[in-house]
Image 1 (spheres, rainbow, N blue to C red):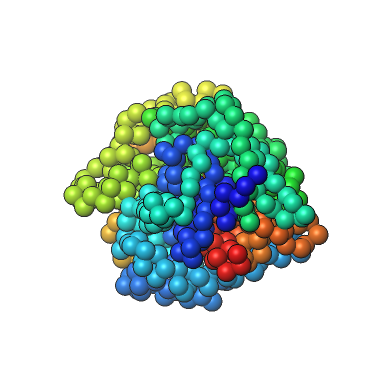
Image 2: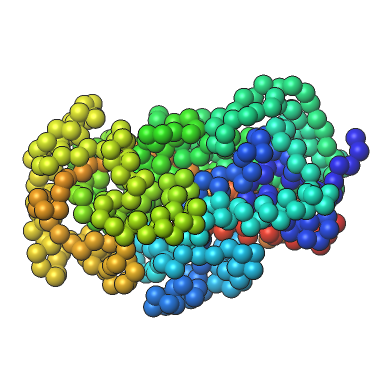
Length: 551
């Protein structure tokens, strides 16, 4: 077996592209091996909204947001809730290093590559109401101009240019089955060549074998992504603290996000930590125009929709839309049903509903100012309106009784009582008639509107849902949606894989979601959002720079 390159990168997603970019800058030769076709370059990052976690950015300062490293690390540690002495050793160090990166050179690093940001800053994961607890104290979610494809582009363009110079070779439709280990060091990969695929990006491709391969190199970097497209692996790793795994979840990622390389790397001698830590959204809806199997889309909600469980009970404080994903998931898992409901009105959907994903935001993804201006007009954004009209989970009616009838038609196995919803909504409507209230959700809405950008573009003024002038009424059935793997291959700050005995695995590195975005779990039990793409970038950069130095 002859050496094909200095380094083999397994996986052509964002982390793999970043690692490759950093290595070719130093003149190293890289072989990128991926089980999908070239149509899927960029992996899951391509489908993302492109949100980036930044601290004390110019965009924040222009909006009057006072942020700092100290506040951000307080939020991160309170959200991660690290509590495992052995498994959280490296994740703690990664967390500190990543927040320093986000508060320091991250923005300039990406800006120098040509990446630009939207002027507004979103406030994701608003927290559970404690300064030292979960959540972002301030808005930190920066959407890139170009969304996920824009993030991928700045690295892919440079990697493709290096390919033309002979520094990068792509081996698509090559599925790795084994990491080759020689005298204790990773020295290559072997696996199956899959038949060619002409499927569009994200569409499930065949796994028909047509041959075998083996490649050698001085080092291997695993950047193969997480487990969100593999429902059986999600169930296998489901955290016991959340009870029995749901039988059915929507898939927030394509089928090729299958987690195969976790077991393969473990079999080679790498260590996996925090297997039971994972990130799933609670606001999933069925895609009326699906691309991959069981395709779900996440609603990115403003704070005003009322949230009911499958029994018709209002979710307790502080389980409001956009406040604490994992805390809300915990509550839902103990409610008796795995579906929930948003109840809102036309006024709310027009201003507060956004959909996650590059394909659901064609104006920002396509960098189309004219289309972006359409958001300022009356009516819901085009993709949201399309779901309202065609989505299987949307019910639109002129009065509450008809709305509840429509909700029960969608879930006859879990009928709701009209009187239960009426009592909660009427009580809530009474609370908005004064500028003060005991209803914590209304307090949160008013707090959000203290940020001028949110007041203008994102959060409606508190109003009565049952007032016909704000109608029609809308109910949205929400599903659990798989998304990210928070645990993974344990790595040191150079992204070098760690063995079970705590020693570095010579020649073997891992970055991105397969490494829990660094260390095997940089987010701990929960995340602050805008941290997933950034984690791919930071850990991929660490791997690439370490190999550029050491080879």
